[in-house]
Image (tube, rainbow, N blue to C red; front, side):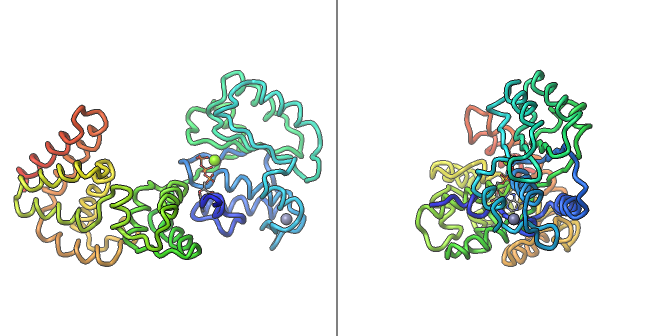
Length: 363
Ligand SMILES: Nc1ncnc2c1ncn2[C@@H]1O[C@H](COP(=O)(O)OP(=O)(O)OP(=O)(O)O)[C@@H](O)[C@H]1O
Ligand SMILES: [Mg+2]
Ligand SMILES: [Zn+2]
C-alpha cells in the first residue's frame, strides 16, 4: 500500500494547507518571475517544507503552468519531479550527508546549465546539520550562484544555521497547522479511503500530532492498517492506548466530587491497562485549558481558534460553572509539572498521583 503521507502529499500550491503567507509569496515569485537564488524554509517538522520546495521546483520548471503559477503535473518535467527522477532537482539530506564532499559536488555541478529544465534546484534538507566546513563551502556557493541555480535550504532548527548563510537567503517561516486544519484534512483522507472517522476521533488525532500533518497522517495510517472500517475513540483507546473524552470528563468529575481515592485508582487502572500516560496528560491538560478559557470568555472558539466537537462544548459550558478560575489555574500548573516530570520519574505514576492529591486540596 502506498503510504498515506506520500499519496496525499500536495502536488499543487492550491492543495497545501495553511502556510498562507509562504504560498502566496512563492506564487507571486513565479508569476512575476522574480526568483531568488537562495531560499530558507524554516519551521516545525511535517508542516510542508519539503512538499512546498518540490511544488516550487515544479512550478519553476513546468512547461505548461496553469494560471501562470500552478504546475500542470502533466508535462514531462512535472511528471519526472513527481516520480523523483528529474535530473535538475537534487535533494540532499544534510542529516546523513553532513560533510564537505556533498557541498563540493554542488559547487561543481552548479556551474553547468540544467539538463532538461529551466532551473537546477537543490533542496538541502535539515540544513542545520551541516558541518562548519560544509556550511562555509555552501556560503561560497550562495555568494555567486549562476542565474539558473536555486538552493532551497530546509530546516527545523534555523537558529543552528550560521547568520552568514541566513542573511543570503530569502526566509520563509512555516507554522504549525491548527487543529481544525488537521482535522479537516484527516476527514478528507478518510473519506477518500472509504473509512468513517468520527469528529471526536479526528480531533484526538489532531491533538496528538502537535501541529504536524505528517504525524497526523502516520497515526491514521497505523489505524487504517488494522483494517477497521470506522475510526472512533474506542478504536483509538483499544489500539493506541488513548483515553476517550468521556473518560477524561469522568476523571475531572472525581475532583468536583472530592473523590481523591477514586481519582488515584482511576489513574492506576489506566496505567495497568497499558494506556498512554503521556497522551492522557496532554488530553487532560487540553480539557483544563478549554475550561479555563471558557471561564474567561464564553466565546471559546474565537480565543483558541479551533472548533471542538459540539458535544464537548456543551459539556464544557456546563462544567465551567462548577469550578473557579483560581482552582483551574492551580490544577493546570500541577498537571503541567506532572507532564514535565513524567519522563524523568523512576515511578511513572508518581508525578500524576502527586498532582491529583495536591489538586484535591484546591477544590
Ligand atoms: N501544509 C501541508 N498541507 C498538506 N499536507 C501536508 C502539509 N504539511 C505536511 N503535509 C503532509 O505531511 C507529509 C510530510 O510533509 P513534508 O515532507 O512537506 O514536511 P516537512 O516540513 O518537510 O517535514 P520535515 O521537517 O520533517 O522534513 C506530506 O507528504 C503531506 O502528506
Ligand atoms: Mg522535509
Ligand atoms: Zn508541468
